[in-house]
Image (cartoon, rainbow, N blue to C red; front, side, top):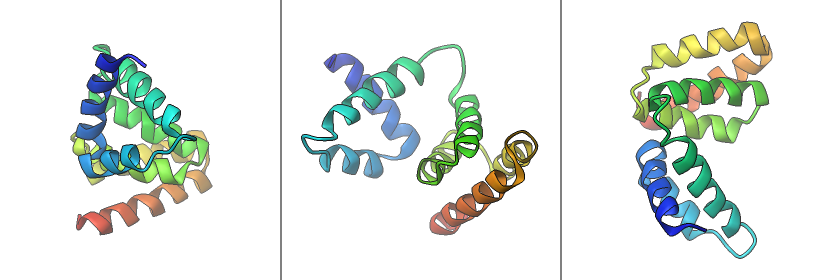
Length: 125
């Protein structure tokens, strides 16, 4: 693990997903999943999220779309929060999910709407 890359990734990960969630994930890691936490933080959150080619808002739109297509509700909820932190509105998220209904399938989009509503309720939005 490259400590400098990890630290940069950790900063970005906290800014997007929220420090409480990220700090709990790191704190609760054990010998089995600690390498995955390090890998995700260093490569996903530093090497990809910190690239200059796309802004965070755009990256969030892409993630919401891909997570809908992959049917990953836990990650989708997490990235709905991240999308809001990155400047997307509920209306923007709605448009992303409507787009995914056509290209990923209506059932996938319906699940994403349902999961996003849970996040909005939790966040008082």
